[in-house]
Amino acid sequence: MPATEAASWIVAVCAQKGGVGKSTLAMALAAATADSAGRALVVDVDPQATTVDEVEKFADPGFDVAHELDPARLSKLAQLRRYDLILVDTPGSLEGHDVLKEVIENSHFALLPFVNESPSRTPTQRTAELVAAAGVPHAAVINRVDPRSGGEAVLKARGELEQRGVPYFRSFVREYAGYPASLDAGKTVYQWRAKYAANMREDISRVNAELQRTLGRIANGSV
Ligand SMILES: Nc1ncnc2c1ncn2[C@@H]1O[C@H](COP(=O)(O)OP(=O)(O)OP(=O)(O)O)[C@@H](O)[C@H]1O
Ligand SMILES: [Mg+2]
Image 1 (cartoon, helix red, strand yellow):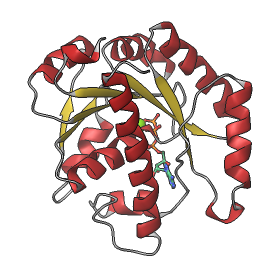
Image 2 (cartoon, rainbow, N blue to C red; image 1 turned 135 degrees about the vertical axis):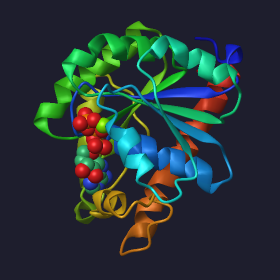
Image 3 (spheres, protein in one colour; image 1 turned 180 degrees about the vertical axis):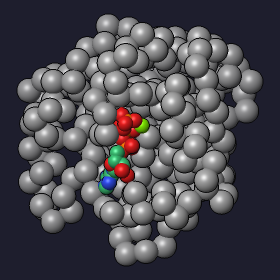
Image 4 (cartoon, rainbow, N blue to C red; image 1 turned 30 degrees about the vertical axis):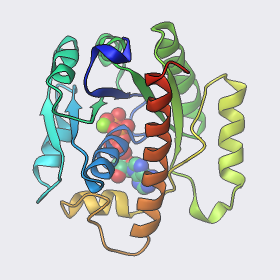
């Protein structure tokens, strides 16, 4: 989908693997946008609407959430021009395959959360191939990096992605108990005040900056 056709950026957050951080990343990037006075919408295309339920428990998320079962309506949402960033949170199950394809076809960019564990590698490669076949620019975001591993875990994860020809962001997300804990407390990552909260925000802000830079390049046709 050409970027010029829509007023809001649509970013699909996808992985044909459950539990790798799709919802976490979608909510955190929406919170990052809100933190800098941007308008963000998380669209949940999961029939179970898990993310909608979570965000509705937040005291004051600062971003909107919508349940949308028809991904073809995404571009209409974008044309409303109400948002700077629309993040589409997709289900990880294979039954969601057709939905995923439709979401991708309606997106400007796809972010693929990647946990460097054996069961995640092939699904990530498969998802990247699906996105590439639709002609949509994309990148993996390495998630759940052990903060104590130094740089080694990141280098290993990058190596696995390179081997599989999957492009990736340089920024990555470390593993902190604050992700599930902030959710339980009804707070976004940017509202969370506990040990390591600043580290969480640092990671998400770096991913957001890299995403914004990439979208800028897409807008001027250099991607
Ligand atoms: N960087 C992280 N550090 C710690 N916990 C994390 C991190 N990323 C995700 N998690 C946790 O892992 C679990 C799964 O994450 P999440 O729900 O975002 O995955 P998902 O890909 O959306 O899963 P599904 O496919 O089921 O929708 C959640 O409990 C979440 O809090
Ligand atoms: Mg999810």
